[in-house]
Image (tube, rainbow, N blue to C red; front, top):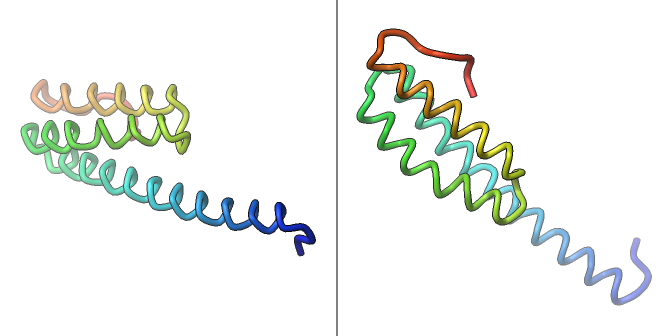
Length: 96
């Protein structure tokens, strides 16, 4: 257990930050799940709408340090390609 006041404060800060990051990560996963469901359903307009809603959430996660910016870019790129492929008959690529 922490001995000094500064160490105790550090523990409190870490707990708060961990809770925030966990909530952010959960929120991102929810948005991604909505996009995945729309793609699986084959509804291009719903998938595009879900994708537009997910984009700022993913970028925010990158800004806040929850996800790496290249990870976000990769996920968005793969989702966009899969959404684009809906109207062109068939899905492209593996799940993001």
